[in-house]
Amino acid sequence: MPYIIGRMLSADRILERCESLAQHSELPGGLTRVFLSPQARAASDKVLAWMREAGMQAKLDPIGNAVGRYEGERPGLPCLMLGSHLDTVRDAGKYDGMLGVIAAIECVSLLSSQSKRLPFAIEVIGFGDEEGVRFGTTLLGSRAVAGIFDQKTLAATDATGKTMSQALIEFGLEPQAIPKIARKKGDVLAYAELHIEQGPVLEAEGLAVGVVTAINGFSRLRVTLRGAAGHAGTVPMNLRHDALAGAAECALAVERVALGHPELVGTVGRFEAKPGAINVIPGEVMFSVDVRAPQDPLREEAVATIRSQIEKISRARKLRCEIEDLQHFGVTACAPRLIAQMERAVASQGFRVRRLPSGAGHDGMALGSITDICMLFVRCKGGISHNPLESITKEDARAGANVLFAFINSFSS
Ligand SMILES: [Zn+2]
Image (cartoon, rainbow, N blue to C red; front, side, top):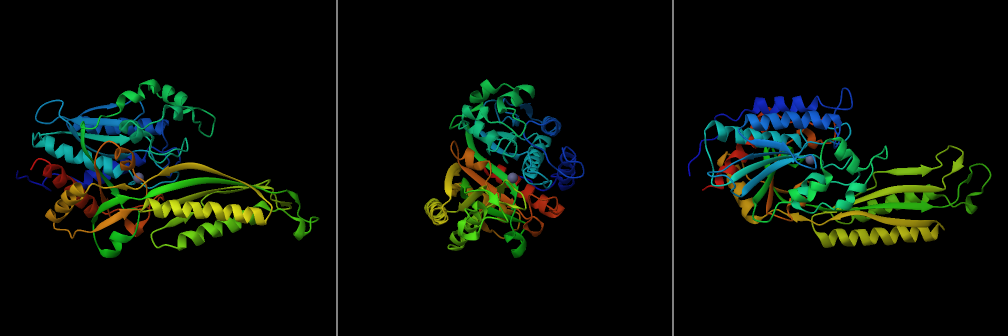
């Protein structure tokens, strides 16, 4: 089926809307917008209004996702699901998540202005929580849609001690209705997400867009080492059980294991020493471990090695060690047929096709359990994300939206 592209997708409007959403922040002069906050309410209200303006029926679902639906040739057809997230990390950029939602709305707006209906519906979802900043677990919105949201998660608390269940109710939502939004296999033809790359590959190769092959899996651990606090002046070095010195050795072990394979990454991102005084030997240290890889066996083996090294270091230093598994997610492969379709869409816009894996987690990890997924990456300046310096060009926003539009239309051919 022939289609006209590029004529009316507005890159100006896409960037203006990213700016507009960035106004809703709990942090003045920066951008921090967490799940179920007043700022999230304001942002999702805007997104719902843009969805309606683009010809969609739109509402907030029971977990706080902004969901818009553009019917196909007749009502009730299975949908092509597009989207990304509307929450941010602390002191975030304006494009991580939001760009994918806004670009998808822009594509629907173009279809709607052409009075064009496809042989399937389109749903655009702005997920309420992907980053997991407020309650410490990620992908809450997309897990609910995929039917893999564990209702026990509702008891999780935020930094103020409020449960997720309370926060949802105060937001005017119905936590008990969350299981009802789970989509059935067959209701969703595919899930496609446009997202900034969050890495430097596309920029290094001079490319506006790239086609994602898979989302790397991750494992997260919380490690607590306990030794003995003591006076920094009176306890001789050979009689100490310094939990921080041990934890530092463990952090170096994580780095060493991750350096052992070019596709492996390992990070100790949090480090808390108690009691935390200049003249006291640290008696207890908590640190986090995050390990990611494009193959599950590679990641699993690295995690097992890290665990045994932490135990060995603890034994040698006579520290007690506790290792908790926080979260594990296997690799989510993008569907070969969708990768091929996205590649044709990229080529149709005159760009060289470049495949690359995603080192960061995305909502597709959850949706992969009910449908085939694929992703399109858009170049970002310096590969920087999760940072106010996050930036994209208008040309790249246009390129991404045009490719997404070509991809959507290729479903009907
Ligand atoms: Zn993101």
